[in-house]
Length: 161
Image 1 (cartoon, rainbow, N blue to C red):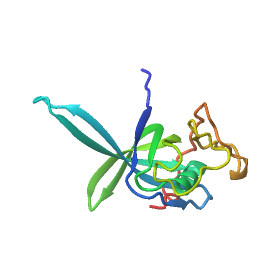
Image 2: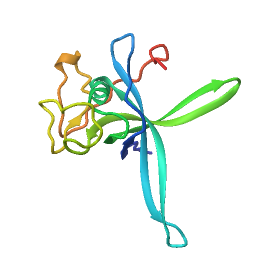
Image 3: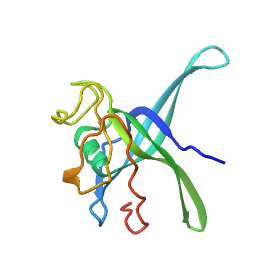
């Protein structure tokens, strides 16, 4: 039986982006994303519901997010669900998170809570940043149309948090 694992989220950052580096030099950032949903309840009243999602960014995508985004910035994330499992004090725990394969900054100049001006090669109409795992960082570039393959998951020794 075939399977499909794809997530698309549009929301706001719940905290500033903090980048960490693995021993291999690969950048990684864990971000929180707040996604709001507005719907009518049984009484016909509008109800706001917020879902908080943990997202992991890799490589150049993590670095760009840290440089240009801050708490409250709107972003679009495309990726896949991943289940993390661990044990604490004899209790098994698990958590669903999104591994980002593509990030797009949302909003124009002056909006979105960014930290600085967009890079020169940023397209105001929909600049997308994704990590191309084919070479050292100086050879990576902005990608605008297709989502590349994600980098391989790190080993447990490489995860900095």
